[in-house]
Image (cartoon, rainbow, N blue to C red; front, side, top):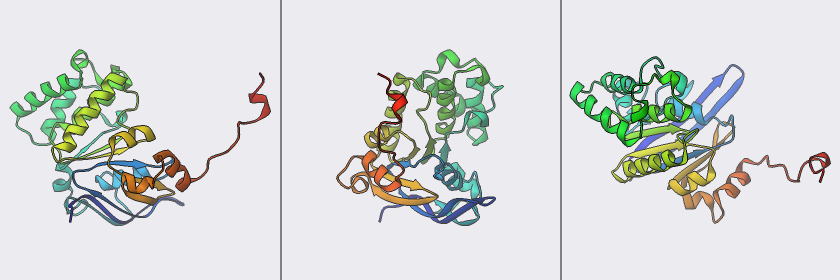
Length: 252
């Protein structure tokens, strides 16, 4: 039986009167490139935050490679690389300082941190921004710096929420190569994205989430069921409005 990189059982999370995650059961097999899809407000970010120990669930258990995230958080979090939102970064640091600080936080020896920081700066084409404060970087550069921070401690699992948002096409291609190499070497990558095309091209497993529940999960071809991923998504999630809009939008 394939080991689970992530195993969520009965996860629930409520914000006031709103049930954001409603009893989610989800398994991400180790060594897979896993895509998490869902409309806005589906519960994707909340689910990933719970899975990575950033948000405590109201009910349920989250395990990373068999380790209970909330019983042994330090052990679990050493195995995870999370793509942080820009507002969660130390924006007064330069990009190079941010990577160095991230490596030291994970307890890496300083020589190792220095070597990996230099390698990641080159790998992600961050050389021109290395000495610039994160607050002064473009959205795309900040995204790449956040990805470098997620990679620096050599995690077994990467959890990336919209990793290609604001990133230019060349950088996006480089990031795809990095992630594909990571998975080919035995790592697990989980990508939450609204881009059906990207998920369909990159991922071998996928889950579709709506209203805080998993509607389908498994190997990509199994979930697609002979259709495109977009068609299958729309069939499961619903909400598509047919027609060309009101008459006044067609004045010509």
